[in-house]
Length: 383
Length: 105
Image 1: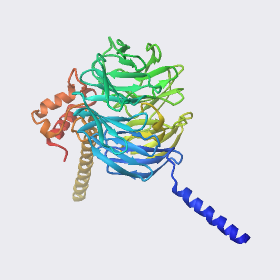
Image 2: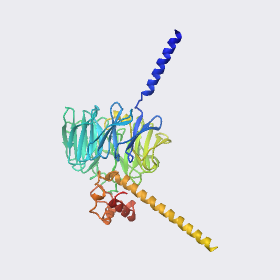
Image 3: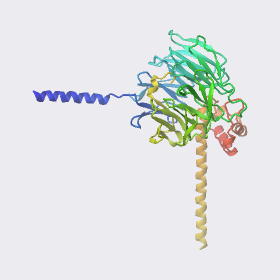
Image 4: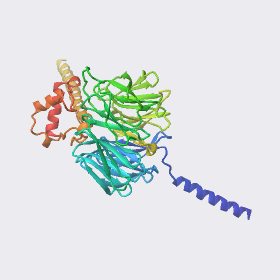
């Protein structure tokens, strides 16, 4: 009897173990865009390794992606206008639609039900049901759209490159309600929203400075930020447009790439006044704060894109500089910031560094890697 | 042994040719990589356009190689097209102009 009991227990335990093997958790996974190959490399943060490759995603130049709230699905926005839904547990593309001719990014609503895609051609934003990828709204703008982000309350915010406007598309009532804010400035090229969902900032290419919106205001109006920052200085050529991202907030300040000047700009997040400038090695592309905000990591545009500088938030001084390899395209911090993963396109690798000692911890082979996206983004407004 | 010396010189010559062909091929490869990867930041990896216009042969056939080289070297003021002269030679710009007009092989 005792033996039978233990046999049953053993079988039960074995059954349990087998089941645990089949359960896969996604909290420390990520996807790396292999842009020329049209593939995503599924990577494991804890293992410092690639676990699989998911193919068949079309033209992934300048591709980005967002995650469903359960961190199981990624919505991938490809340059060819493709919107793909990828299941990272089954490790395959489960749905794919060609929704536009030339797209540039996307966002997912706070409730995870709507996915929006920003298009250059035809200019505008299209919104899809996150489950079925059926289109639920088409918002033509007659302009290239940029800087699309999600905002709390089932909203999407985006800007018009050609017309200098920002539109707020509110889906809270079920149908779309659009507020247009004019006078945002000439050629906004990208935007960010703060993690609290309050401030939307666009960088301007056609003139000096940036423009902010207070989304908590009853009627948001364009607030000019640093309108004179480059005045009197000769603009340097910009070989790659900088990016603005929600993570560029360090303590109480925003850290943003200047355009046409080899500098990052520090702006007080409450007053929106300049608090400093740091001269950098080249035209900054990403200025990303480590999640705790203590340091800011900066990469640069072609032809100075082999280098990274690390800036101390307290002193605003460069404290570390190194060369991971040719064509550093993107950086992604682990959610608590102990590591940074860096895609080095022409070295064909993602390199992993300790953010405190700057020691290199590992390297993962990848085919012309660009964006790196950890699943923790699922729970961040604006990412 | 003049014959041997001649043979040696010939061999050396052939080797040098090989090296320079290889270098040229590498330069072509690097420039093509630049076109797709770096120009591609704005014009798309397949050059079908993005923030910047479509650069495929049919779309730019109204340009000749000289004009296109100038646009590459001096940019288009008032637009996002930067001048590449600070980091590119005229020969390289000309190579890229022909590459764009003829289309990637």
